[in-house]
Image (cartoon, rainbow, N blue to C red):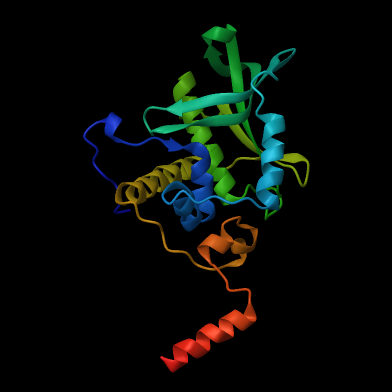
Length: 234
């Protein structure tokens, strides 16, 4: 990997917001412009996503339905990996094969559900940036609730895609956990050097709210021609 830094103590290692893993996986340059340069802009995708999360991330909108308990806006953290964040929704379902949770006085299977406004690019498969985010959430929950990491059945992950109105199950957790660790090391490398990753124009740029900051365009054709003529004279 080549980017791991040996921090003298855990306090020296900067925490990373879980949702920023998704931004980095979508486009490292987008993440750098937001996190390092402090750039921000909104488009229709960002606004609709914010509206969806406002409906879901309500910590006072918790429910109990028999053996199922639902917690929204649950704070997550991992001391081991230096992760912090908020889960849109976490379900605790009573089960003999679950994790014993003292506060709930029973064994529960835990499900974390992340809400996204879009749709999966492939049927039945979570988009990679979203999968990375959910994997990081599961890693936090394992540490918080003392789950046996050899038994991933205890904690399940899903993404609810608003465009198709249903959940898609998280798969390949072991591989994605390794990818989370690699991505965190790379993000901290850029953070420590205050370097914004290079960008590459592709189809994802159309959906990015920072496209005009990342790839500025001269929209006035006459102005563009005047600039070109001046350059040629010089």
